[in-house]
Image (tube, rainbow, N blue to C red; front, side, top):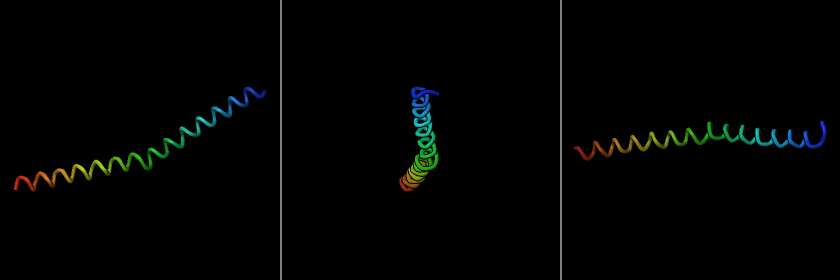
Length: 54
């Protein structure tokens, strides 16, 4: 394995690792935050609709 193959392998590992940690971040923080926000918004809209009807 010469230097160009090794540097290519390091670039591949770096990009793969960045993608892996980005996916972990998205699945553990961003998606649940988005879902909870949408559910709260739906509940708030339903409560506002009930208040308007009564």
